[in-house]
Length: 168
Image 1 (cartoon, helix red, strand yellow):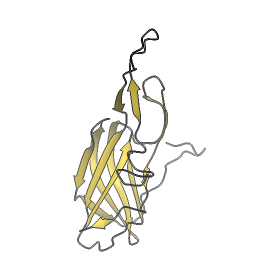
Image 2 (cartoon, rainbow, N blue to C red; image 1 turned 180 degrees about the vertical axis):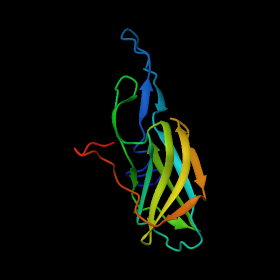
Image 3 (cartoon, helix red, strand yellow; image 1 turned 90 degrees about the vertical axis):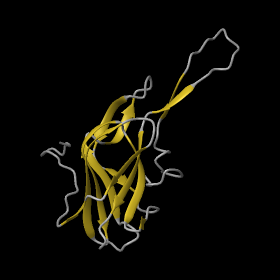
Image 4 (cartoon, rainbow, N blue to C red; image 1 turned 180 degrees about the horizontal axis):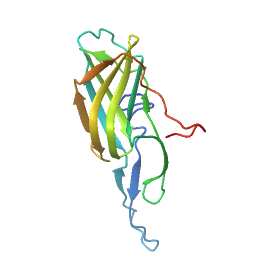
């Protein structure tokens, strides 16, 4: 995802709009549809340490238990039919650090996410913003702000797999 709210690859282009309505084949009246969002649109506002002077992050990802990065939805109700759990990568092409604050948007699958975190690589240094447990709901935008950012001494990103390569 681009990290932007609108435009190519943005949070809103990753959103799912689901329509419901009553169809009467005997009626000549127009079909009225009600559209609802099926993804959680989240705005992240992360205040970085004063020592961060870069304006462009090298890498950003959102992680957490129960967070999907790829899903197949049921056509009947847009609920998750199948999915892959894992980090959601945010493109750093258009997001910027301004006044020690990194702000970006993401479309995420609704549900309980335990240990929600934003992992960042900035000027070769890894940081993590631990956001705690979050209930992500479809519909209105959720804003998550934090200044709880920790500098990491080693790389904690990656995917845990068993001996056959299956995600754990």
